[in-house]
Length: 81
Image (tube, rainbow, N blue to C red; front, top):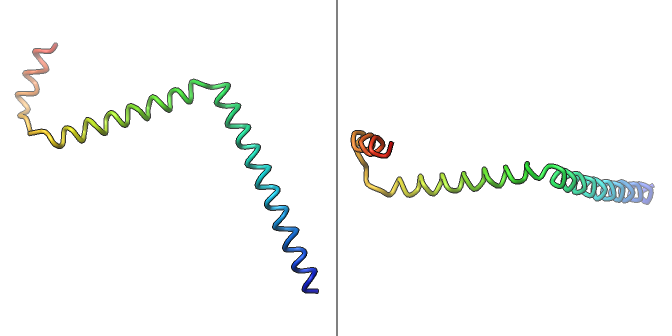
């Protein structure tokens, strides 16, 4: 009886491993197809990530710089316009 239980456990484990490998393969294929057919999605995701990195760097630089008055900021904006 113990042998049957161990054998059944092994079969269940083996089937799970096979299903997991098959699912992983199907997922890879689906992602590859989406990226091939919709390159714009990947391009947009990369662009947004780069914008986020640039914004983070700007914030970090701003945190280290001295404070400026509101009036000074608006005067400079008016000159730039």
